[in-house]
Image 1 (cartoon, rainbow, N blue to C red):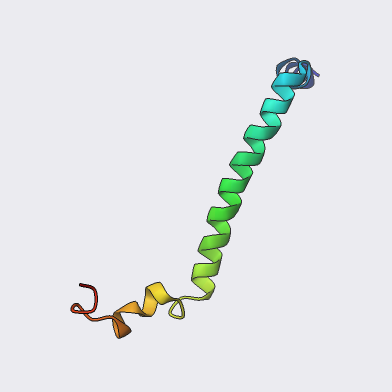
Image 2: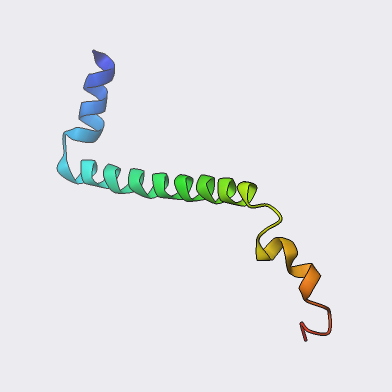
Length: 64
């Protein structure tokens, strides 16, 4: 039980540390989830998004 005891003393013993851990964990989860879901979406829709087909419709003189 030394692992459970050390986790309790490090995270759960003080309320402000626990709340800080929750916020940091939620922020990290959001970043990872957004990155993974964007990559999955881009992979499933490759060739159908504007960033993939822009070169077909925009010429160099249109960009100026």
